[in-house]
Each structure stands twice: as C-alpha cells, then as structure tokens.
Length: 293
Image (cartoon, rainbow, N blue to C red; front, side, top):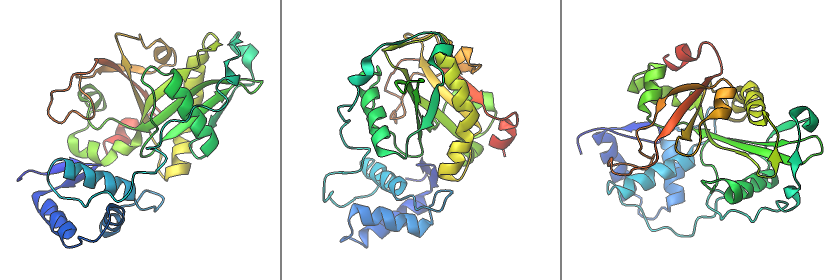
C-alpha cells in the first residue's frame, strides 16, 4: 500500500501502517483491549477533556484488520460495552402509551432533558427508538447527546439523538466550502441528528419544530460541557421517498442538496441506499469561518 488511509479521523501513511503492523507483531500476548489502550497512549490520542480515545483506537484497529492490513489477536471475550448490548425491552413504554393530544400551549411546561449520561433514561430512549423508529436503534457510538422531551404531566412525547457527522457528503461539503484537509480537522464541530422521533401516542401541531428550536439553543453548550468542545453546525439526512422534511424546514433548517445514495459502510462504491435530502442548521453566524479555519 503506497497511499495514505483515513480512519477514525486520523490519516495513516504507508510508513505509519508499517510501524503499526510491526508494533502489533512485537506484542503477541496483548489483548485487543490492551492494544487499543496502549495505542491511544502511544499517540496521545485524547478527547478535548483529556480522556484517552481507546474505543476510537479499538475501532481503528478492527477496521485495519478487516481490510487485511494488520492481524489482531483473537477476541478473548464477547463485547460487553453498553453500545453492543441488545436493546432493552423498554421499561415503562407501555405506561407511556396513554395518548397525548392537544395544542402546544396545552402541553406546557414542556421540558427538554439531555440524558446520555443517565443510564436509566438512556436505556429508555434506546428501547423506545428500537420499538418505534422506522430505522430501529442499536445505541449511539462515539460523541453523542440524547434528548428526552416530556410534557407538563411528565409523559414522554419525543426523543432525539445527535452524534458524529458524516465523514464525507459532497453537497454538504460544497455548501460549507471546505477542502478535505479542513474537513478532517474540523468535522467534530458538526453534529448529526441521526434520530428524531415524536412518539406515536403524541399528536400536537408544531411540536417538532418547537423541539428542534429548543435543542438548537442549547446543544453547543451541552456538547462543550460533555466533550470540551462546541459544535457550530447541525446536519440531518431525510429519506425523500418517506418524508418531506417539513419539520426541519419549519424550524428554519436549510436544504443543502442530496446524498449520493451511499452509506457510511460503502468502501467500494457498490452499496446503494435511499437518496436523502440534506438539511443543515448553523448555530452561529460565523460557522463557515470556524469550519474553514
């Protein structure tokens, strides 16, 4: 291999891969867990808050092994991290099915709570999305925030998940106006709204756009508090054969083009997925200046 390879936001040259392959070979007794931990320390690969990015290192090693570029030791035990566990049945979902109907004012005071750091609430969101979202949900990986919305009596009415932005998206990248190097450097400043669900027992006009507005006002601060850096732009992809993006347009998200009909996992340009409309929402007027820095 003579060309560089980009994985997990890191650019690996042929020399880097050679050194990495030799390093793995020199430590045959290490588990995958230790390899990923040691690699994160070796590279001083940390989050903005100083935590080692050992899970990102683990994912990078696994992807290299899948491509035949390195050979990893056999997995010593089945994965037990919370992202790989099966979705819970959804404790309390049945109780939440009592219809919530009315005007937006009648549901007040509505509350929007960020629950990614609360195991019980996070598990509830995971179960609700697995059961009621058309894409299902197996859990969020990497940097993410999860919001649960409740109406005045405490009943859940909606939830949202924001995570890592798409690595490449031609129309989005053209709309921002950044080259590949800046995208690689600043992609973490974009958050992707990967799930948004108003629960099927809820009917309230304008609820969706109200929720998006509330989240837009706080998500940069929430991201900063959890990960030590802000986000300046939100993105989402709406499957055009299923939806018209009405709620995003009502919340002043901007249409920025369409996807190419490929997935994140398409390494060989052969996986065809539904074309999606791209919607973007700047969180600051200076977002292009920040992303192009």
